[in-house]
Length: 135
Length: 208
Ligand SMILES: Nc1ncnc2c1ncn2[C@@H]1O[C@H](COP(=O)(O)OP(=O)(O)OP(=O)(O)O)[C@@H](O)[C@H]1O
Ligand SMILES: [Mg+2]
Image (cartoon, rainbow over all chains, first blue to last red; front, side):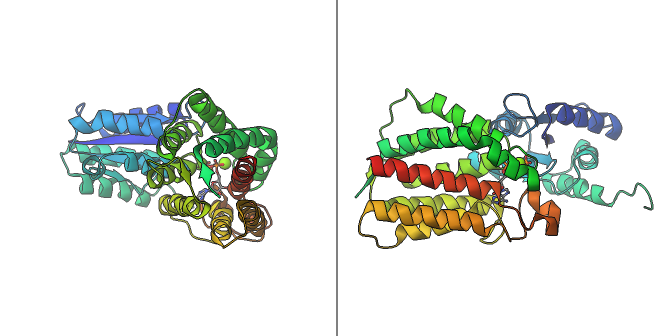
């Protein structure tokens, strides 16, 4: 099973997005979805340590983890956290190129079908094409 | 002519002090082209670094810079966290087991750190980032100089010029790149904090 790690500048947003992704995707309860965010004083920001800790907690129970980051330093910090992992663990983590909410939701759909890491990442990427309006 | 472990510790103390003093200025720079948090981020990070290292004994640059890197990565909270974190991590790896090196060896380690920043940030010279102050400073430190004082003076001058040279640049990396053309005409906050880093290294090196 592939796990999904949502990384946001806000811990509330990360948790909320995780909740929406599970609720709206109908993903089975066994898909591990975690949200981390905020700096280490609870303000807006991102902490490499929080991402690293979440990854090391998730990896032993998963075949791989897809990180779905929001903007800017969420992406940089995710890359930084992956660099701290052993090469073997690092090879089991991918950062999604996708909008954070829609990407997390579509990744959850893929993951719950038992798809592999590549397919889950591709699922997230498809969120770029979701149309909301003609404007 | 050598850079010592005690100088590195002194430089970190000075960097903490100058960031504390300039945090509002750094944040003002970041409010023009970013999200107005670079000063706050760096201030929080460096304070935490000092708490971590103040009463701890280190036997080599490797141990000191590893602690600095891990603390910065978790405490800074913005892009500067992973970027400065990687810088110190790679420097520490390069200088592991050593507690005193010649200036050009220190410059080699800084280059290793900068390569880490550029790989992580996918950034190049001219993208209007901290790279634009750091690369010229390292190059200047490497140039043959009569003594350490002259070498560090050249490095600081180059860092400050690199910092000012970011003003007319169009940002290609980080949050300021979202602004496109509107990023032109503002000095990059990260390049500015790099100039403080080089100034702190220089001061510590001169005090011996
Ligand atoms: N990809 C990058 N490569 C090199 N330096 C970068 C990169 N992105 C940002 N920077 C540097 O980081 C500085 C901004 O640091 P800061 O701590 O304010 O992060 P931030 O951009 O606010 O992060 P966030 O995405 O959380 O808003 C910039 O001025 C720039 O020098
Ligand atoms: Mg900022």
